[in-house]
Length: 326
Length: 122
Image (cartoon, rainbow over all chains, first blue to last red; front, side, top):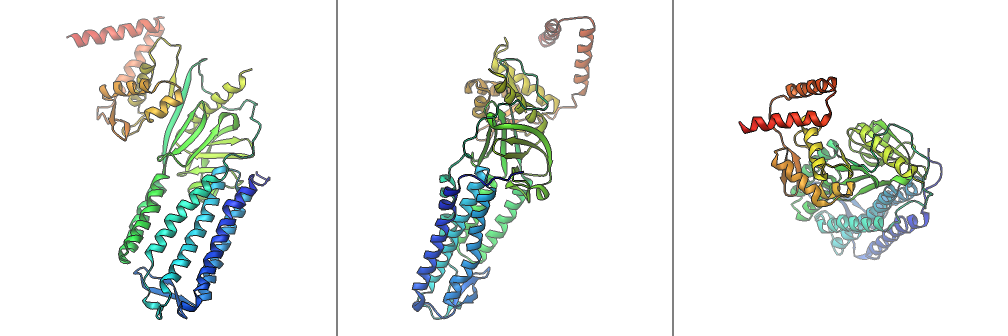
């Protein structure tokens, strides 16, 4: 059970909270500065066919998205502070918060921009360009902030006690590596459904920009639906097919190794790279057998993968080999 | 799957890899369609030369155990052959008989190799 707050609070705030609030504030200021040029009823929402179907006053068009997104950005920041022990989890939260803020700010400015001087908001077309800039820019900016966030936890003293558990019989000097691919049926199905639905919307709206937007999440989902899990003399590594994201536990951070059974929704609230009950990180591609590594700094990593017993035994063996040396 | 390399063994490193993959494929531990780790990744994991792994993969391809496809790496082939249970049973019987008579592993292997060579020469 994790009780200590996550490390790196300053960088988390500077990358995950401040830019988002500044962008949202700036977008609101820009839109409000156009107040005199905007129609009394501003279009704020478009249906699947690209026809405006939601309207608000200029002030309301600014306050509505802020009321939704500011709490989301703050929530991401708080989660990163409280549950961000695992660097990747912290980075994802930082990236999501700042990326969502950029997306919202672009949409606010973009939708207001096309309505300057308009008299009838019902005739305003959907602004695929602004959404594309929002999504792609949001991914880039979120990714940049996530990448810029410092990696490892605060330096820990390496673990030196041997690990308990089943081991493999390796001769002195014998090298061993275990590798297995774990594929998420959930990710694959969700990617296919997402591709169909999003392309449907894009075609209905007849906006090629939206089609470009539809491709991005589907490609991302495809990339993170399969991971190669490796145990070798560097430790445990899980790498997506694109090489990134990548999770790594060096041998000198291993405190304990065991095999467990994961129920994704109950234990981790779903699939993907997640923080589970108790604050441990999980790379959850499916339900069933999983390898769990307890590591220094109150952290743990659970990876769902077939044949975790062999992986656990090898990880224990390799870890203890480094610790039995004088 | 688990790969092991013993640098102190007289068996060449690539041969050790070939033997392991071959046995795993025959046993069904590596079902058809399974992708072996990328040669570069496996070489790094085992701290051996990339060309050693590539050599092993090429030998496995020549034996028809895997297919090498650009961009997809080495994929275990569906051999479509009949159930290998009789072979596994015969091997188990041979091992038991050899052990009962105190025959050294090398001598047993020698007999098998000799028998195979004779068969091939016919």
